[in-house]
Image (cartoon, rainbow, N blue to C red; front, side, top):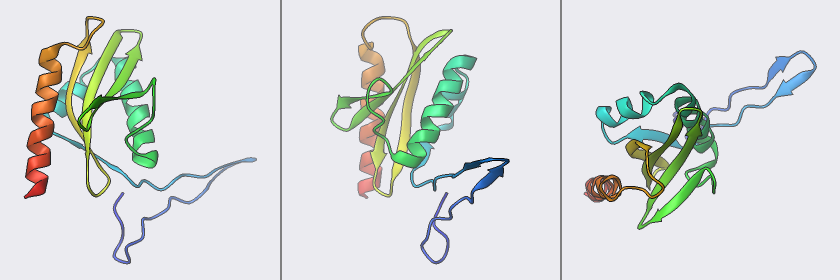
Length: 137
């Protein structure tokens, strides 16, 4: 959610659900994708991994990119991984942050080995350098 013309972030009002009141938090971070192809890979994950991704990114929109382990892990040099575990297996989504409270999803893959494959890490690092360089312009 973006600030309105007055610069304030709109707050979603309380929802009356009978005797239970739910307070919705304002969204202060935004999620972006390196490309449509990256978004398609991530949203094409198996159902339980996709559900985990949606739940964690909803939380990231409110509290920020660092959810702490076991949900997120710093990989070094500003690169992070979102750790997804579901009935169908394990997946990782590599991301970085940019100014303006933006979180950029750089690369996603289903994990098949204990260690993150070097090629997956290199792909994410290359993309991170590209988006950070573009932001610096």
